[in-house]
Length: 561
Image (tube, rainbow, N blue to C red; front, side):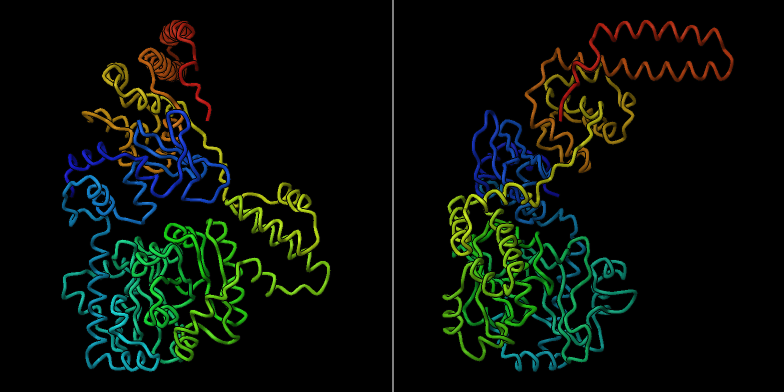
């Protein structure tokens, strides 16, 4: 593992505002900074960064943590890679070869990839090589994609067992089902995460009778097919440099177009584009060219993708292929120049939408207008929003004010998360303790872990007792996600807690605990018929109630969420 002291040093030296500010436009709001959340779509900013506490938190989607957590979530990095990224910015050298959370799964996938690649390049993989030749793909031009071949006879299990991997590990990696290998007689497409590690595989049957024709690895702890994009790792530098990306549908579409010089390209994993994939794309490019198949299913897929991409705040253009054509056969038949010309004529989403959605009746036209304003309402750029709104008004002969009224009344923000989080008194007290950490020596004198009933809070208190110096930015490493969300939502809002307020809150909580214990003793005394004990406990309860009244019940922990 990376030395804890080194990680803490990196956290202390890292300016979280500078880190987050590379990805999010932040504005200073009092002690904190605020911006639109990069993890869900929203119109009103609910994402905050605290330079004092070294944390970020979104009051919409509830994501929060420190600079390391931000990079892990935003760039889809593992903990060591996120630490390494921050360390590099600070000029600190660290060793990140250890400590991967799912190290064994990455290792088994890497070995599987090497097995498949070896098979492709040997006699047993001739069917795979011949298939690539028929598809006009040059292995040399696409070697960064690390293609392979899974033999019909298998052999992966034996190979990996010889490497020391257990059957259970192969099953966890999604390489086998029961004891049978998932991929047989298929061309193999390794799927890489944004750190370049192999997280899964796609396979195309060599013969069309092999069903399904395309097969992906089952989802695992490291592979969620709706959250990653094929080819983005290989293309990300060019995508960032150009500020735009070419989105195609499938593996062969991507590889054919890529080998002809279009190196800012990616594809969903054989399914419709998802919201997570659209958000991932928006982190690398501000303009997306959709180049889907020219048939009806390709058009429908483009229409679905448009809404998701607009919602992710990117500029969307669509290039229309001839009917019954796809990027793979188009570029092989017509060449790279023809594709460049096609992309040069790509239209914005409005023109594409209007062209492909037929409106033969008035009701169909009204439905089209409502579909368009649903999309327009999600546009954050005020200039683009105004332009499209006026364009729709002009084309359909409708007053802009009427369209604006429709948007205001009926269009709801798609990802506005407003779930109410119930905060318990113990959780409120713990948030106060965190915000008043410099007084923790006093807290330990008055509170004991047994003074907390809730398991998460009790476990956190036990951990805090062992901490020499706690930093709220480390909270995500100490508690489970649900409790972290609640505590961060309070810590981000509240100013540091005074010693007086904290003591008052502690005494109030201690009084409640003592009251509950006395009530339990009274109940036990009644059950066993001990009248003397019952009266004694009632006297103690009366005394305690008078003490609580002096403190002012609820005053210290009445935090509105």
